[in-house]
Image (cartoon, rainbow, N blue to C red; front, side):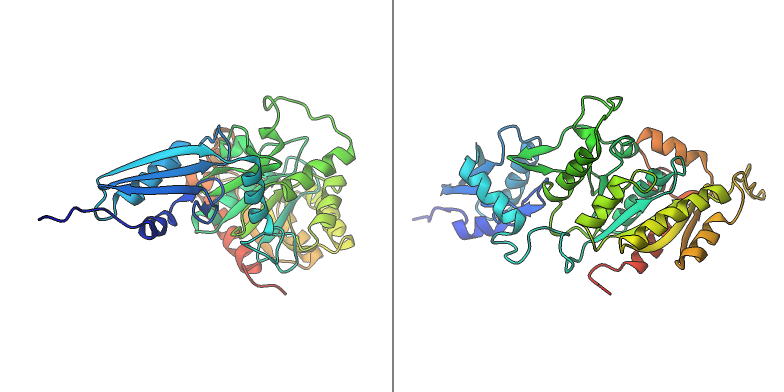
Length: 370
């Protein structure tokens, strides 16, 4: 008599499903209690999984991942995945876990405590037009390419530009009151631009509304407990948003972007003084638009002067992390949603930005607090 192959055990299936992650929450579906029922009969494995919301945009990704993982087990000839939706109580239990329940009993957020390993970098400038947002997205892209887990909060609510520069559109998934950031090339992003009808929408808010929006992006967005660097693209100047960040994230550091022009560097110094007043450490200066080479090998032309970034760094007593040359590919990448460190990785500007990212990471090593 031949013995019929009954397939894998429930424990083997659960172990395999631990490698299936919710692509938005970045956690195992087993850890998140998304696996409800498992049945094995004559080599056919039936799995019932619960989605967080009925309109989950990545449901097919989850289904395919389940099929791939279980289908590779010995004795499995067919995988039947059936999807359900979490109840209100189940969603609340999930949110509690993500915010500090069973997974992290001692923590409430990935970066709201002084002990958090997440490095928060507020990118500031004294005035607009110096390329602060461009520098932000390219630093984030460079660190993500090096294997770092990176996020960006577009805190320039009136002048948001991060979605266009990263080529991201859509609306964040909402699980009750918790928002899931959109993602591009491993970079998790939240911007007011995702919550308005189109990018031409004008935001007409007073200070308290700006503060509320920023706090929501910090506390009501699931950034994940594995985030290593969180960049915050600030509006130019030293207004309400900068003060809100200093109050909400006292462990944040500030990176100042300027151009070589003495007038721009002089204004940028005020951002450094503001950081000093609110006890926020300035970790460095990046000089953008440092020079323009009209042809390969030609000497650079200093369209905006020379040395403003170095003078500012010396005045603030911090290092100059990088000098980014003028490059049309930088502008084109910002308009097309392909940052120059990805679209033209061998260009002088991309090399300078990657080196600045490495120096930044050296100044703010993950997991080390001073």
